[in-house]
Image 1 (cartoon, rainbow, N blue to C red):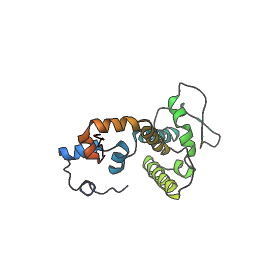
Image 2 (tube, one colour; image 1 turned 30 degrees about the vertical axis):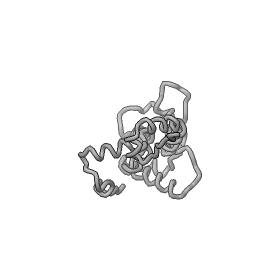
Image 3 (cartoon, rainbow, N blue to C red; image 1 turned 90 degrees about the horizontal axis):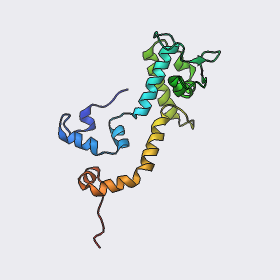
Length: 175
């Protein structure tokens, strides 16, 4: 993934300066993630779980060999209903959505690259499929925006300096 240099993202901000910190902190969460080209912690966690699952299933690590029940073909994870195996229950649906071409990678780095390409290709194609690990971010953003809209408006009206930095108009009627 090729990101533009920091100076191109924020030409007027100093990396170590207070100005940069103020700009980033005052942005809404979704805007911050977009500007910094990051994903939500929830999505990064699931991506990490998928990578760990790949390492366990392919035998690249010496632990977790009994965490997963695989289908006969070995390409799908079966849910066993045991509550004590948290990783396998959490990752099963997302692992089963990943195509075989990604799962058949020869190394962890190849798996990561193919997983990222699969994500980009699926999003770019505009296919109306749901249930992928990157959908977690959109679900989270929807919940944040829906739940906190009223408290956000109240916060902005009681903190005019932050509202000014964010470009939010908080003028009240004086009548």
